[in-house]
Each structure stands twice: as structure tokens, then as C-alpha cells.
Amino acid sequence: MSLLSDLKSIISSLNIPVETGAFTSSAPDLYIVLVPLNDEFGLHADNQPGIDVQSVRLSLYAKGNYTKPKNRVIKALIGADMTITNRQYIGFEQDTKYYHYNIDVENVYEMEEI
Image 1 (tube, rainbow, N blue to C red):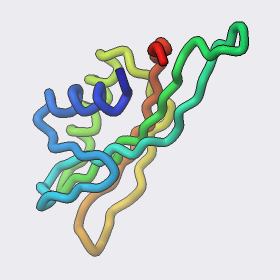
Image 2: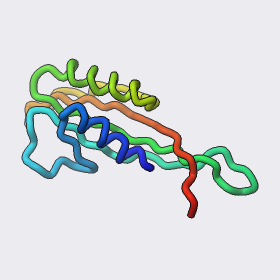
Image 3: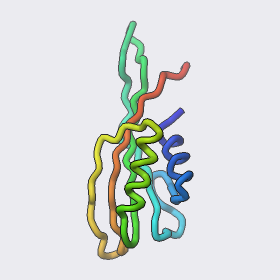
């Protein structure tokens, strides 16, 4: 399991286009780009990690009102038991005419057998 795949499923269920790293298709009026931030091990025992903590930034881009889709995404993330660690309005991008809003998400996964 991975946070990226879980987030893609959650966002896709909201009918919002989503890609990882960069949006390579023709950009619609509303879309999300997932940017992996951090992976770390936690809960060590016997020199072995017990959990995998993964962090991803959701960058929401919207032409027009961004607050309704932002609230839908946040509600869906909370409903899926995701931990939201930060929310930040980045600004209006004059050149593209998109509003940009970031949501940082973290989740804990059991370690898979290696």
C-alpha cells in the first residue's frame, strides 16, 4: 500500500483529475498534482522499522472559486482517516489564471515484507 495510490483513489472518486509530479495532460479548470514529500520509518524494534510514515503534498489548481473543491477534498481525506498536517493558500497565478492551494497529507502503513 502507498499514500500516493490511496490519494489517487480518493481524489478520482471526487471526479477531479489527478497526476503525480506534474500535470502532463491538457490542464482542465480544476485538477490536483500529487508531490511526494517524505518517507520515514518509525517504531523501531530489534533494529527493524515497524511502520512506514509517508507524506504527500496535494497541489490543487482551480480557475474560479477554489474553496468548494478544497473543502470537498479535505472532507474526503478526513473521511478516509488521512492525517492533514498543513493547509496553505499559495496564491493566484497571474500567468495561468489558476488559484493554487496546498494540502499536506500523512499516513502510516504497516511495513511490508522485504
